[in-house]
Image (cartoon, rainbow over all chains, first blue to last red; front, top):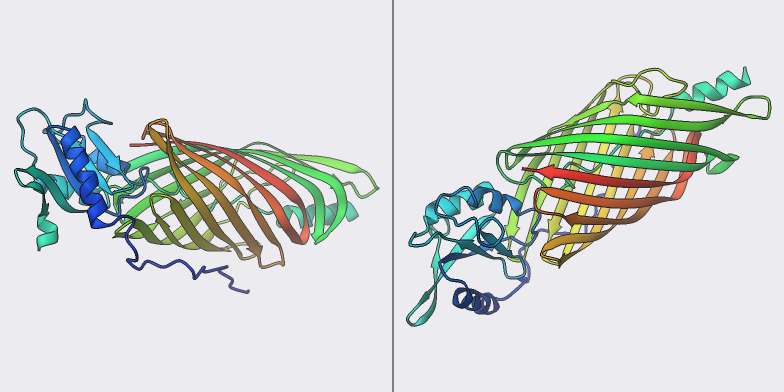
Length: 132
Length: 271
C-alpha cells in the first residue's frame, strides 16, 4: 500500500509579519469610535480579522449582564480591518475588563488592550493577561 | 459473465463522496461550548465511464443526488467533535449490459457515517488569525444493498491534517487526509487548497473562494477537481454556501464513472 498524504503547501507561514494596520492607524480609528459612540468599551483584539470565525466573541459577550444587547449586533460591533471591538454598555455601568478578557479568550482570541478617551486624548491600557 | 465482471469491478471500487470540509463551513464554532448543524444538498453528474484516462464507454452517465447532515460540538476551543451522515436521495448510473446495450442501476438510502475529532491549535497575530488541525476520523458503515452502492459500507480509519489562516481580506486553507479501510477498499486521500477573498456587504460578510481538491486512490485512480464557492453569513446564526467543482483531470484505476461536475448548496446553523 502506498501511503500518500497529498500536498503540504509550503508558501503559507504563521510568522507575525507586517501588521494589517499600524498602531497609529488603529489609534486614529479608536479615537473616531470613542467620539461617535457613547457608553462603550473599546478593545484591540489581536487576530480578530474574520467576522464569521469571531462570532463567538459576540455569543460570549452578549451574555454578560452589563452589555446592552439592543445596540449594534447583540451589543457587539467588530471592525476587522482595525481589529477593534466595541462593546455597548448599559447606562451607568462600568465594564468588567477581566470578564470581557476571559470571554474573548474563550472565543479563541486575544484581547490586548482597551482604549479610553481622557482629558489629554486617547489612552490605552493593557489587559491583565498582556501585563502578566 | 462479462456482465458480472463489470458489475463486480464497478461495485467494489466506486469513488465515494467524501467531504474534506468540516461543519460549519470549516470556520465555526471556534468558541467553547459552541455547537451547530449543517445540511448540504449535493448533486453530481459524471459524463463517461472511464478505465484509466480513457473513456471506455463515452456517454455512460452517473447522476447522484445526496443530502448530508452534519453536526459539530466545540467542547473546548481546541477540541471539536463532528459527525457526518449522508443520505442518498437518488443515484442512477448507466453500465454496459454485456451485450452492447446499457443497464440502469439505482441506489438510495442512508450512507456511511464519519466521526471526527478535530484538534486545533489556534494562533492570533496582528492582522492574521488561523489554526493548525490534527484530525483522527472513523468511518462507520451504514449503507445497505441496492443495485449498486455510492458508499463502501466498510469500517475505516482516517487521519487529517490542516492549516488555515485569514486576514481581513484573504483566507487560505490547506488540508490533506488519508483513509485506510478494513475491507477491500484501497487506501485513499483527499487534499485541498482553498483561496478566498473576504468582503463585507449589507451589514454582514462573505467570502468568494476558489477551491481545488485532489483525490487519490491506491488503485491508480486520481481526480483533480476545482471551482468557485461563495460563502455568506446571513445573521451570525445562519450561514449559506454554494459551490461548483469541475473534474479537470480524471483517471480511474478501475472501471468507474468520471469527467463530471459537482454542485453543493449548504445551509448551516451555529449557536
